Image 1 (tube, helix red, strand yellow):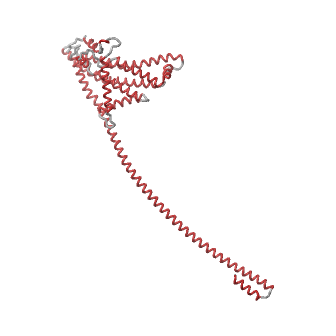
Image 2 (cartoon, rainbow over the protein chains, first blue to last red):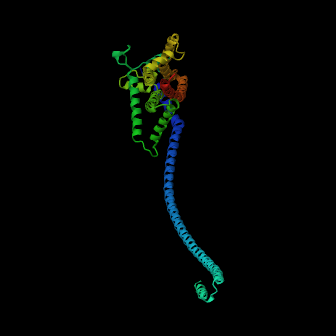
Image 3 (cartoon, chains in turn red, cyan):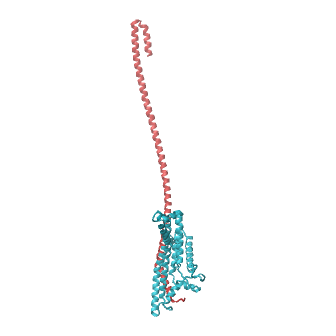
Length: 156
Length: 272
């Protein structure tokens, strides 16, 4: 087999084919590759950014939680103080009311006892007079009973 | 130029269609096509080394261009497998990748000038050399029969021996004993047609492509004088146009071989 210009012609065609590939085929593949690289780079960047944002958000959240906790404890303290004050005030009022009621009740009791005593005294006086008049009807010695009556009146 | 008469075209083509075989085994069944074996092995090693190097140095960050290219190929193949096969892709994915890239590389040998490799090998005293392994029917059948073995293997694996036998005798017509034989015959035809169609399609396309290249190459030495130069120019243009068109063909054929491999193996997983 002898080789000749056939091979040269084929080589020219091959060179054109390579030129064609370089200009019309490889650019598409290369573009796909570069797009992919860009996409991956962007994705990684975005992930990193998101990571950093997450971190700063975490810090912010932690700070806010701390602040909220502080505020909450302040509110609780205040509420407890207020509650204590209310309880104290209520207790004082209750004691005052009790004392007032006790005093008025004692007054009532005292006035009622006085009244009862007065009535009793009146009735005893009447009884004594009635008893005395009966005794007077039977025994006419007033002097004997006069001392008794006096003694009775004094005792009452 | 124009050193050969037109009658030399037949001789030229016949010469080019001869495989490199050791003289000891020429002709018989045990003939070995050293050219197909050498080129396919070299391209296989090239594929393995290339992807292995890129995979070894792969980063999770922004990939280099080489890695991005390998990733695009890998993602493309994996996407095809994912579309067809809904199972464990750990075997089928790499298989499809190997089939695709290897077949593509072997097909791409068609783009080299049809006389280039023979010219080089002749310098080393080797007369016949066909550069395109996939234009060798032994090569395409070697791959399709490997796929065939995998089809059988996965059929047994997915359905069990009993299940597979049951399917062979009862699908697609039905369970009636009278239908066992027709079912089985049909299944055998279906089974046998897979490797044959797989191998013949690739071989036919590549062989025809190579033949067209040779026919066009015949133009280079078809005439004398001014007409000869005109034919030479037509040859260059024709060769280039066919070469550009052939870029499409080799990609499509590699793609079809891969997709059919996936489809056949995923069919072996399906239950009827």
